[in-house]
Length: 274
Image (tube, rainbow, N blue to C red; front, side, top):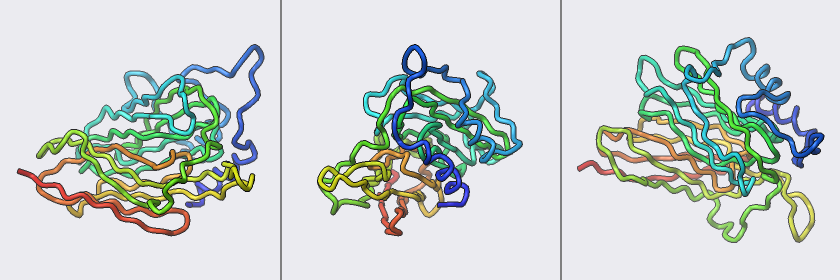
């Protein structure tokens, strides 16, 4: 965990991973584009003195998330970039935040132009009614942000599935739409892992399960880096990322994974071009 991530986590743990008190007149509510006290503190620490474009029509990124999520431990989100990945101007970094989570910075993803299109899909833990935000940093230094207010709770305390601990670390690729030679091709990587938050109770011992989660994921194709992600327990169990790449020749998709016990795993998928 980097010093910045450690500082953010320590600064927010006092809020604990439980639902906030209801606002007068009912449950808390907010507009998708609103700020929050938690976000203002985060912004000052992560992007000090930098402007962030949030004006509809000008922002180069879009966040897609449900208004209401049935299960707070696995909330689907999609990041859509309005900018193609070109060497002259591209998305070089994507930040995912959940304002009110104990660890609000869910992921920091460094990208290369080789992915073709900086769109991502994943699932996050959302512990209480909160804004979920994406900040896209362009290669020219511009910052663009979009956010959605998600109504759900309990994401950090939901116990993970522990039926097959021997599979922890297994890393699997999928190509949901097949291969598109020389064109943007969707791919998906999944790491089987409990991603324990430290806020789940063991039903037998009635003690908290220690935090244990995937902290690093690096993906390449044909020995060319596509992206590297620094992750936290705000990612759901069995963290999954759907991403893009451009297969110009036969090669191998490769994922290098590391978790908080310093265990390392590798996933591979050979890709042929006809």
